[in-house]
Length: 66
Image 1 (tube, rainbow, N blue to C red):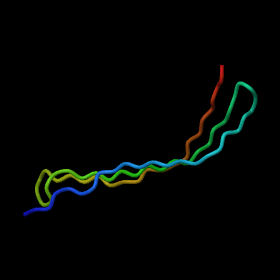
Image 2: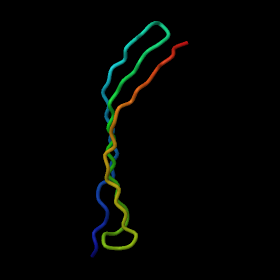
Image 3: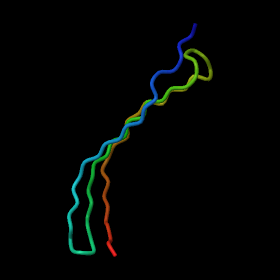
């Protein structure tokens, strides 16, 4: 009997700082990583699909408060 797909998870984490310039403006700098583990179909057949990846990088933000 062929094996079925494994665990399907998505996980994300981030860390960063927010610097307040004044009462109306903040600068936000973060580093974020997202993990995805997805599998569908039966191993060894044409419909078997695996998506296992890590995406990560810096995020810059400018926050206006009004």
